[in-house]
Figure 1 (cartoon, rainbow, N blue to C red):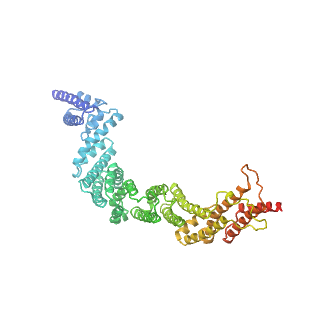
Figure 2 (cartoon, rainbow, N blue to C red):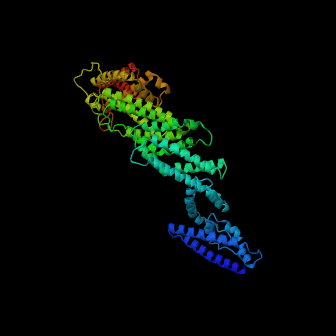
Figure 3 (spheres, rainbow, N blue to C red):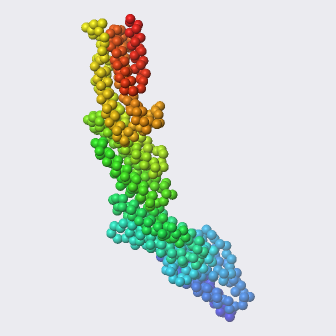
Length: 569
C-alpha cells in the first residue's frame, strides 16, 4: 500500500508539473489563440487524470502521512486563475482541501479568454436538453453566475447578428418592409427560445431583463443601423414611411399585449429606434429645395405648395409610426428639414427686380402669406416657438412686404427731383399778383399715389396677401394687435408708410432751396415761398382725403413757410 501511495504521489507530482506547464504556456500574453486552446485541452486531460488519482488516494487511511501532506498542500496562486478557468473539474479544489488566497486581479485578466473558450462550448451545447447544466455548475462553483448570464447574452447577440446577416445578404435590393417583417418574426422566435432556456437557471423576470438588455444593446449596434441605412437608401419617395408604418400596423396586436412576452412589440420598437438616425438623414435629402433664383411667383408658389404638403404628410405618417410620446424625436427630424429649407430660401437670389412691375411685387406678398401658413403648421407639429428657422421665415416675409412698399413709393415719387433747385427757382417773369399753383411734380405724385392705391386695394382682395400684410402691420412698432382683422387699419398703415416717403421727398426738396450751399438761410421771394406753401398744403389735403395719418415733418414745414411769408408782409 505504501508503495502504491508513493507511486500515486509521484504521479500527482508529475501531473501537477505538466498541468502547471500547460497553464504557464496558456497564459502567455503573446501566445497564439490556437496554441492557448491546445494548452487548455492538455490541461483538461491532465486534470482529469489528476482527479482520478486523487480519488484513488481516498483508499488510504486519512491519518496516513502522505495523505495529510496531500490534503494540506497549497496551490500556487499564479496557477489558481487558470485552474478556475477549467470549468467542469473545479471540484478538484475542494478535493485537495487547500485554501489558497484568491488572486482576483489575475483571475479577471483571464476572464475574457475564459468566456471566449466557454462561448464556443456554449454555442455547441445550446438547444440540447440539459446541455448547459455542466457549464452553469462550473460558473456557479466559481461564484460567477453573472458571467454565465453574460454568455447567454453573448450567444443571443450572435444569433441575432447571424439572423440579420442572412436576411440582408444577397445582391437583391430588399424593402424595409421585407427586411423588417422577416427579422421581427425570426428575432421574436429567438427571443422565446432563449427565454425558455434561460428560465431554467433564473426566474422569469430576471431572464427577461437580461435578454432585454442584450436586445437593446444589439438594437443600438452599428451593425443594425448600417443594415437599416442601406435599406432606407434604396427608397426615392415616401414609400419609406409607408413601409415603416406597415411594421407598426402589422404587429399592432402584439403592441396591445402588455405581458413581458410580447416579443414582437419589443423587436419592432428596437428597429424603429435604430431607424431614427438614417431615417432623419434620408428624409432631409428627399425634400424639394426652393429655387436658387427668384424667377416667377408661380414657381415659388408651387414649390411652397409641395413643401407644405410634404411637411404635413411626413409629420402625419411619422406620428402613425411613432407614438405621440416621440414628439421630441419627430421634432428632431422636422426641425432640421425646415431650418435647411428656410436658410436656402433666404439665400435665394433675385435678378429680376429691375425688370418687374409694381403688380408683380404685390403678387409676391401673397407668397409671404403662403409661407406664414406653412410656418404655423411647422410650429403646431413641433411645438417650436423660437429659433433661427423662424427668424428666417419672418425676415423673408417682411422682405416681400418691404420690397413692395419700397417700389410703391418709387412709383409715386418717380417724377419728383432729388432736390428742389430743379423745380423751385426764382422766375422774374412771374407777376407778383399771380397766385402760385401746385408744381407739376406734386400733382403727378398725388395722381400716382391714387393710382397706386388701386393696385393695393386689388392686392388686399387676395387672402394670403392680406394675411401677410396683417402680420407685417401687427408686428410694426406702435401698431394695434387687432390690425390683422381690420382691413382699414391694414390699408391705412401701408398708406402711411408709402406717404411718409412722398412727404420726405417734398420736404427735402423745399429744404434744399431754403438753405444755401454754405449752409446759411437763403433769401427767397414771397412768391416762391407761397408756391412751396401751396405744394405742401396740397399734399397734406390729398393725404387727409385718403385717410392717411398725420406727418409731423409736413406740418412743421407748412408752419415754417407760413411764418416766413408772414415776416415778409
